[in-house]
Image 1: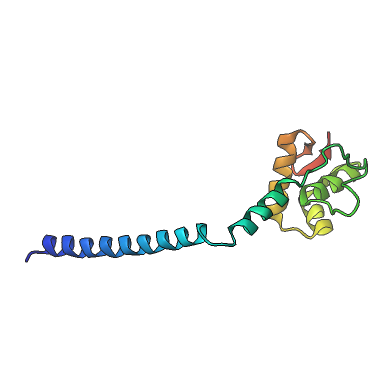
Image 2: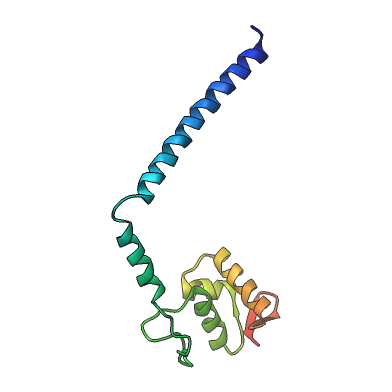
Length: 127
């Protein structure tokens, strides 16, 4: 028997094994769907669908809703907005405790959103 025939035989056995595994999974799924506690799963789905998010709530002008913390982007934006002459990456890193890479990514995002601009190279101010 040459190598190709042996490879085909091994591949065929592997596919059969895979098919048996898939058949077992299909049987388990069928049992799950037909299980008697199906009604309790449907009730849980209905409970989730009745949760309504109130979109009329507005954030307070000074930050997020009460009880929620600032996102990392909001934190960096606040540091930049509070600096009158601008702030550089090192100062942002010192004040926030974030890694430089994270700060660079946030600054890039804020510049793309038009919220900040570069005053000089590496110094950022609120627009």
